[in-house]
Length: 277
Picture 1 (tube, rainbow, N blue to C red):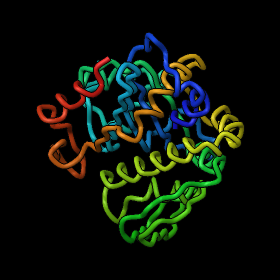
Picture 2 (spheres, rainbow, N blue to C red; picture 1 turned 30 degrees about the vertical axis):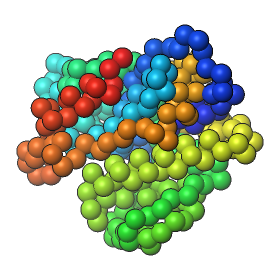
Picture 3 (spheres, one colour; picture 1 turned 60 degrees about the horizontal axis):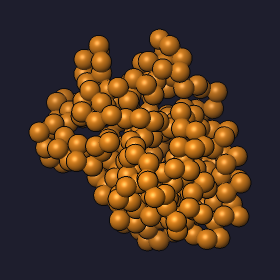
Picture 4 (cartoon, helix red, strand yellow; picture 1 turned 90 degrees about the vertical axis):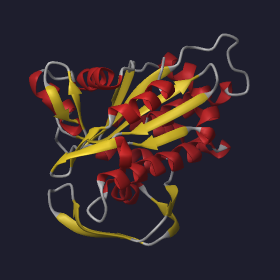
């Protein structure tokens, strides 16, 4: 949800960008599978890699499903969603660094920054902008949607454009039992797109203070204010024409029991072309 912070910082700079633009940057966005009271040692429910290039106002976005195995320094191949928790259990605060190092080792691109948020943060940020508009492409019925108290409920969505508050948007972004993690990753990108679109509207400026409060309370990042100010104009300008991709289909190779490894020969050239800094 890094884009919220970018929008809040940089909209006034979009019209007159720097004569000497800052360097391109890669940011990994980690959505934690954390219930109330749980810390940063939990698994990641969502992993997105974002590139913002101020030089040519280009934005790229890659979603990597959680059941993909990648190379972890010193640990061999590990399931993507376990890397953050594995590091946090050994040294609190080290989760993002190991995720970034693993992405670098696996795909050969440097990842400079991270942002982490939990379920409560996701809901709070969506609610801070009074919800988002999502065009649901087809009917969804998940009879085993996991609740925060470790139970399950039935969640349904009818096709068509609809307004979603934070709770509803989280359900849409997390549901997967009716299809797969690949479709879930695509839905997560769809929610992110709706959020950036909402924040780019001129009237959204009146909601930024609520967004900042939600960010401050529910997110963890190594990006400082100046980082955000530097790259926000490129993010907002480049977002409508961004190149996005979900690692799926021929991008991955099945190994066992619903787990996958990247098809490095196919996906690595695309990643290096779009995330070179």
